[in-house]
Image 1: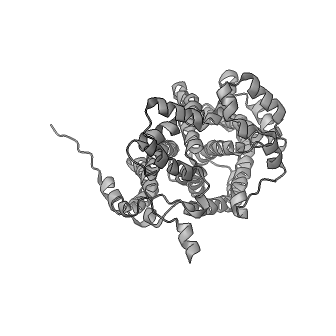
Image 2: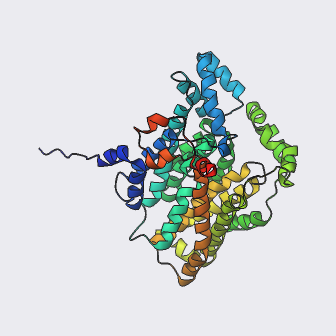
Length: 419
């Protein structure tokens, strides 16, 4: 009897040079081990993580410092529960991870590795869920869109572990439902706000509407168009809704997001945004490009999408219109704009699958030529922002050499500024 041996050359290559191994498997993404290499690299990125000057006020900096304090508290189960209650968080995963890691070490950078394990799994599975459905030779414009897909919520968004991990977990449950009709996968969507980030209770609202009403795409499209131009939320009514129906613990822990003073300052631009111009606008430019594509696909490709073999795309388009409508409204609340990233992920996936797997009209090709420079702008700036947490060890090191600089890496951005 012949025993089939599964070679693991990718692990050998990865140990020698993770970055080059990743590049090879991204180019050859159809190889069976490719998504696991992406997962491994995310973990490695966590091990070589650099907290640069630009990241000093970020969540990740607070999480790293917290491990040292927790380690010296030596919390028992009751102490851990009390610590969670005082943390101001509604979801439980991050506190569980922090307390668990603190039992073994006071070095918070080990927590980032754990973050990388969790984030990397869902990130790699979502990306390859799309890649595995591409047919034929990859088109040039598809490559640009795929590059964008990797960068909408990339691995360096570990800086904000809770929300961005929640984004990928929610997407992980949503895609099989929208594209395959697997309702069981939605359990991930419903668990997300309780495990990872409570704000995804908002994301469950459009999902619940879609489950209840089905794909009422004409109404969703009208709602989408209205919210593109008129998206201010009435904060008083929103606060009343939360106060009347939300649990007390949720009311307390969402107060800072619902503050009328904070909202007024946010709308009047009194909250100073110190980012350079391209960091402020690269996601907006990308969002506008996606909006144009979605409108074009709906207005000029609706009949094609209604065909039996394209019905899944028609359903996905309907959900995107509904979800983007909610995202446009919520974006008027501080931090609410982050839901547009999930909407952009869904929209990019739809455009990729339609453009790659089905014949494209001349007008759609013309639109792709017009959109390409704006998408490339998004790609360049997204990669530029990665330099705030990527270290030299991330690019040139390996799991063995990373031990030498663990917890003391400089970001590439800080090194550049040093010159």
